[in-house]
Length: 213
Image 1 (cartoon, rainbow, N blue to C red):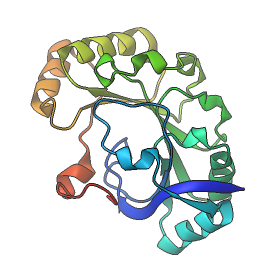
Image 2: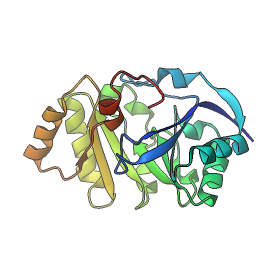
Image 3: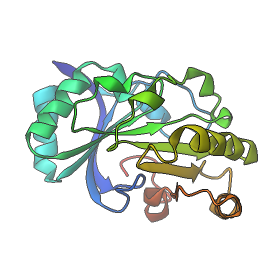
């Protein structure tokens, strides 16, 4: 079984409740969305063919316990499920970053979904598979990327109606360069919105690097 792989590298995890931990990042090629703030355009098409076994070996050589499988959209490639299973069999902690447009029920039981809910400012909120809200498990996490106050209000309403109390981790961050974290923090505090504010930690550490971080 083959995969189209954009890049494999070690980094500090920049998002989710795992932020700050060393991770191996497996970035797969291909995405079905075109978000206005996308910072990984190169993953839409760039990549090389690798067998699942070769990817597992590359991860093993980097020596990290934690692995993030991301994209693009990793669930576009059916072989990604075999990769995730193989990594879990090696007793690794595996996160799968998915854009919310694909059915997450296909994920192996122990894989942790980090699922985007695309706000209107992304230009892609109409692509969401809203059935995923019912498919979320206690181990999964949801994140919103907010570009402005309209996005925030939209996301906050979804959190109150559908997520708070039923989802373990809800994360909200700003689209890099389009909204200040301070503004988002002020809105959250005013509303007593009890979710986690996250910054893209890797962009704070390596602000001048566009890839491989």
